[in-house]
Length: 196
Image (cartoon, rainbow, N blue to C red; front, side):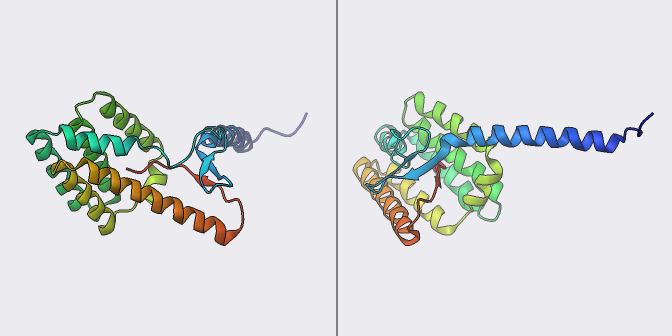
């Protein structure tokens, strides 16, 4: 009557259909995280130009509030987490987990219940994007030193220095981004990846 049905071809066809649907969904989910350059040098989300990428001061406020409200128990927790970050330099997954634990310790030191919830949400996003984040957030001595300096300011209760430090960091990152755009002369798409 006809050719016999080859099970491998049927499975390959079904797999191809699933792959096409998966790629379409993945692109739709990732679209809100795409950032495009603006004429004024900032970048905004492609799907909502009113949201400026890299401009959130939420983590600045969290660190400053942690400095103002931290307790002796918070200092012990921060120092323990910092020691784990330093010890995890050779293992990207362990390093990522240690950074998340440190972020949670900073959030808890604020005394505000919202910040730990945001860190838990961020950790959930990290879990979903784990493979990407392990590539873009490699352990480095410079990253650890920056984090150690920030934790030192929290322990010293120096909220003003934290605000200045993180404001300067955002200014440097924005300047580097603008320099990259000027060098290429093209409207490169930047991905909004939240890094603590």
